[in-house]
Image (cartoon, rainbow, N blue to C red; front, side, top):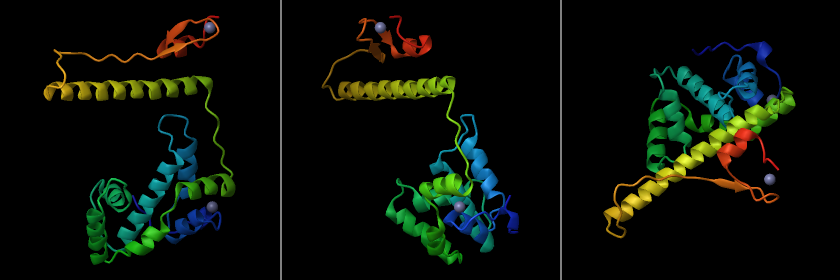
Length: 206
Ligand SMILES: [Zn+2]
Ligand SMILES: [Zn+2]
């Protein structure tokens, strides 16, 4: 997977992404960033995910330099332990200690991690990449997915809450189902739609 040779043709700029990419010999980095960013499927990376991807490659290159062996998924996990919001400070300290013990210069590496803003600037300023705006169909599709996920979440939280109140004898209910319905009312004609129907038919009848 990893290549330690520096591909000179890959050097595009002096911004942090360019410098770090060159220092760690991250071959095909620019190609990868542009390709993942402009991918027109659901696999498309946000700049946050791109920064994460690049930082994981930095971490991997550093572990390679230190001659460490790692298993599948270990790079991603180590990166998460170093940077994740949900990781306790104790775990983070422990992870850093272990890396330092293995002669990995953790502090330098963390300083070399890039932010999503830096990646965005590199893409748009240095590489002059542009994000095609999504088609109407794609927008509808994404909106449907987003609202569907929100409905599922609302249903799950409602179910948990009711079940818990029931368990604690604060509330008395038999077996139950939760149904989440979101309606949109057109103020021009007072017609009501479920949001699903409204998206499906592309607008109000009025
Ligand atoms: Zn750049
Ligand atoms: Zn209407």
